[in-house]
Each structure stands twice: as C-alpha cells, then as structure tokens.
Image 1 (cartoon, rainbow, N blue to C red):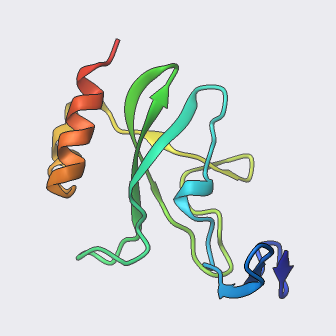
Image 2 (image 1 turned 120 degrees about the vertical axis):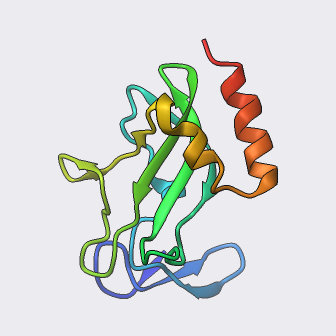
Length: 125
C-alpha cells in the first residue's frame, strides 16, 4: 500500500510486517522490465543508488535479449523525473551495451560480478 502523494509515493507500508519505509524518488532498476518483448532481467549488478565518481547514477544489469545473455545499462531518474533514461513511450527501459565496449563496463564491476557476467556472457548464442 502506498502512503503519501504522487504516482510512486513517498512512503510505503509493508503489508506483511506492517512497517513503513522511505521509497526512492525514482523507479529502481529492479522494477524496469522493458522492452518486454526482447528483454528479461536476470540480476541488477549495480543499482546506481549512489552517484559514481562522475556524479552519475548509472544502473548495470545482466539479462537476456531475445533469449541470449546481454549486459544492460540505464541512468536512474530523480525526484520529479522518476523514469530515468532511456525511456520509450513514457516507460523506463534498459539499453543493451554493445559487445565492443562490454569489457570496459565489466571492469567497473565487483570481482564477484565480473566472474558471474563473464560466465553468463560466454554462454551466448
């Protein structure tokens, strides 16, 4: 149940535990499921909740694009503009990192996530 104003709310009550917690002022990467026809999210590797050294709040994920493992990225939104970028027809979407720059993105991940992503991408069609 959402408690507070706005389409995404400021606070949410957890029905099972009857607790209230502060919600983010943007759509979190784990809730971004588009483009649904091609993309299915496997795991958010970095949620971008905190700005990086350049001040960007970038999320990185591993998923499947047309059933083949792929690396996805997006910029989180902000208060007043919760959708972030990229977006399509008002929906938050992931974009697929081109293969030629995947290694550069993978190097920014934790060592555990690097191993997982490298293993999953190796199984690509």
